[in-house]
Image 1 (cartoon, rainbow, N blue to C red):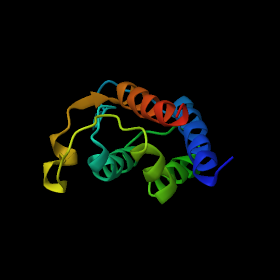
Image 2 (cartoon, one colour; image 1 turned 120 degrees about the vertical axis):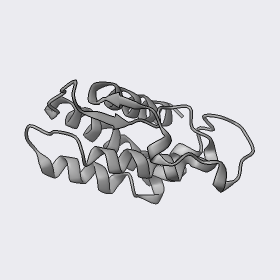
Image 3 (cartoon, one colour; image 1 turned 90 degrees about the horizontal axis):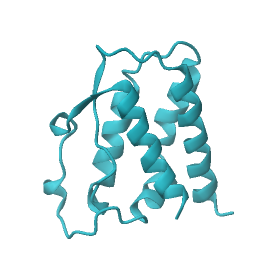
Image 4 (cartoon, rainbow, N blue to C red; image 1 turned 180 degrees about the vertical axis):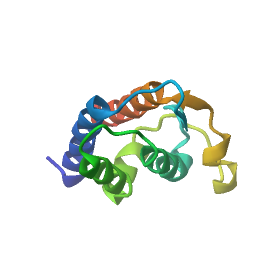
Length: 124
């Protein structure tokens, strides 16, 4: 199995594990890039996910939270996500949304979307 597939699979498993340790409170809202991301905007969407993961209320295993954040920076993850062509549109870098412009959702919905995005990449 190629390294990028192994790296993506491990990130997916880590995010699912992390989701089980999160204290989902309705009062915590996070910016959520969702799963409908243009290929050229994968980098900014991953940066947003990474910054928001830092805000999660983790009941235990803060090391796992940091591991997920580090993994979201890896080039293998970017390449694997870019390859799924979630939204096939020509775009320029300045057309990508900033993290602040994404809709806010609760932590449960945030994790659901992140897991869905990783599932889409793993199925490719």
